[in-house]
Length: 73
Image (cartoon, rainbow, N blue to C red; front, top):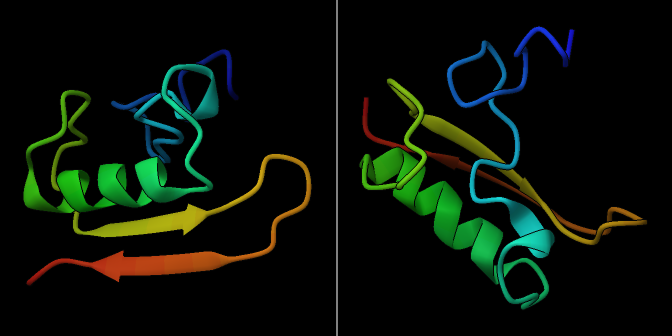
């Protein structure tokens, strides 16, 4: 499924659209929150079409926090 583009920015479940810790400075999840806000606003450089809901989780090895952001409907 992953090789078929399931989690790509144009797939049904886009994941890690900002590139995450490997492509940005690691600020304990703040870059992921920023990307979630950009997705909902429609201003991301890797914009997902019709993004209205974003799930952000922190920590690469042991998830210890989660945030769900929703845009205006």
